Length: 319
Ligand SMILES: [Zn+2]
Image 1 (cartoon, rainbow, N blue to C red):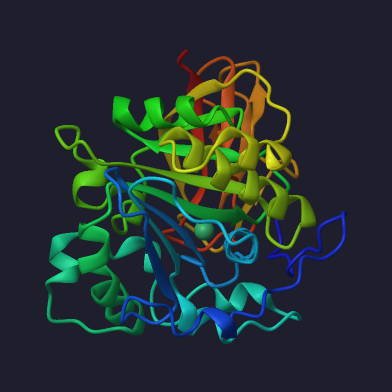
Image 2: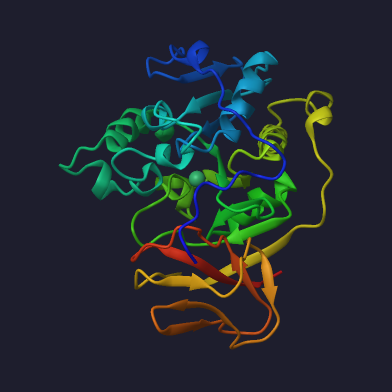
């Protein structure tokens, strides 16, 4: 498949949010605001713009700020993550603002955070790290290249799946170890440690710039706040979308691009179920890529296939 320009979603265009009201924050870290209810309870955090072009999360935080929402117990942090990348956002080429020097969602190993290398993403990660070390439960809001159904990325721990179940949406829960090229924020430290009481979920809210992704991000935010009783049911209710029963898909393989001539055999959007094992779904150079088992789910096909990057993941239903 040729490299596509940023495809405009069919439902219109989700413009970025004016973040200037949130720049100062109240934590000493730019674009980070924490409210303390004054009563016992967990420290929750909702992050937007971990990828600078994924604006749905910024809309969700903007909504929570404008609604005047405050936690009724514990603490709540709202944080805009890769602000420097987002500041380069150009509506003609939004994906160029995904990151500046490296992917902010691949730097969360101690080796990277404590290492000698400095990138703009690592600088921001190091600035946020003390706050995140203090967070008990994290919701990280993202969006996708294709109009795939929304996904909750649970990581590999049972507690990750349990958190997705407590949210009750999105309908697809993905059990996935992440990426070979670096640790995601949702897997950082206690969030990914099965022995820790902390937990995290990454929600992929839909296609970048699709207005529907804003509603999914707001829905996910209220579900997350409800899961820890940080808001009452009446506050959340108007913003919750209808649900369908959740299915758990466990990723078994990631297809890594090997050549500069990779193409899918069809224009896959994501979450297609391929009935037959051995079905060719892509050609990489002159090598055909086949599904490894019956009822194989295609998770998050990429529209930009560069050597070394993940083109698609294979998953199977495990619930
Ligand atoms: Zn993302």
